Amino acid sequence: MRSIMVSSPDLYSGKSAITMALALKLKDYDYKVGYMKPVGNIIVDANGVLTDDDALNMKRILGLQESLDDLAPILFTYRLLDDVLEGKEKPLAEKLLATFEKVSKGKDAVMLEGAGDLSGGSVLSLSDFDVARMTGSKILLVARYCDDFAVNRIVTYMKLLPRDVELVGIVFNNIGPNFINFVKEKVVPYFEKRSVKVLGVIPQNKALMSVTAGEISEELHGQVLAGKENIDVSVSGIVVGAMSLENAIKVFRRKPNRAVITAGDRADTQMAALEARSSCVLLSGNLYPEAPVLGRAEELGIPIILFPDDTMTLVDKMEALLRSVRIKNPQKIELMKSMFSEHVDMESIIDALK
View 1 (spheres, helix red, strand yellow):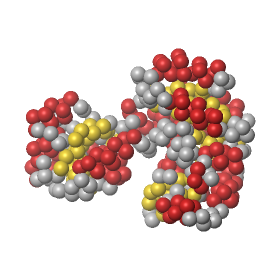
View 2 (cartoon, one colour; view 1 turned 120 degrees about the vertical axis):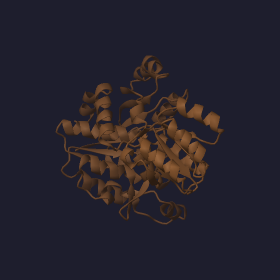
View 3 (spheres, helix red, strand yellow; view 1 turned 45 degrees about the vertical axis):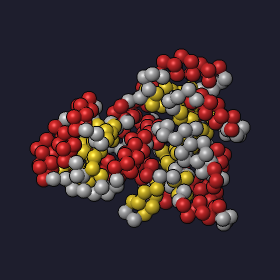
View 4 (cartoon, one colour; view 1 turned 90 degrees about the horizontal axis):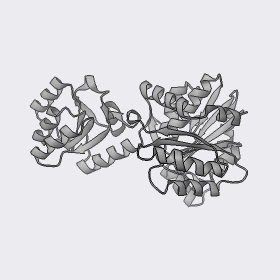
């Protein structure tokens, strides 16, 4: 059995998507694939059980039989952090190793998903480097190139990489059109001259960066008031309806596939968003809209979702959700797998698992 730690120097690099795509591709190669997120840092409640959202998602996608406790054995909660800061002894390494042995049993390959960025899990002595060394895993580095400091972050990561932990290579993920040629022509050769394999450059795909109205409602705990039949409509961004009605109409029409965020008592703005055929309308302040607004939304099939948060809090939550989009629906899963197949050197990864 071989294991690979999917790690990154950055937050929101797409580790989960790469881990998922790689695991699915290995299954196509008839590998028996296991998964574990050693340090769960995206805590969710799954039917009364605290777990990590990535582990929950991977259990479903890969059809894993292991319990959620095994897939995410250590949850980085505030309580755990308090205990560690107070110097309370926690047998975290022992627990992790015992769980790793359990999820590895009968598997040909195990995917380990890193916790956040370079610093994830460090205060627990369970950074990605620590876990890779403990489990004998090789590291697959996932990196974005979203600014001119990206290479610095990758080089820093590699300088800190322990000598006894092997780097399989780098996958550049979610590379925007403004950077794609630069990465291929300048960044890739830079690393290859330094004997670092670049296994792939995956371009940005807007379909993977969007969420549905249903996911917004579920993730942010909203109440769907209208348009339930179109709850799977795609949302690629947000517009805040805190402007004059005349300007709002112009903005809504210029920016399709956006969710309009406005207060529940702004009937004029809500109507303007509906007539501009916005993807959905998110109402803040727990203020119910007027009946004509709901009626028009039903006619047009545009979801209206109510939230208890004030407008700015809702904006912050939506921005965070769009930054950390998780691939959960079947269409996105197949798209990500297809892009991975097209742009990543799978054979080199297979060789690393031998």
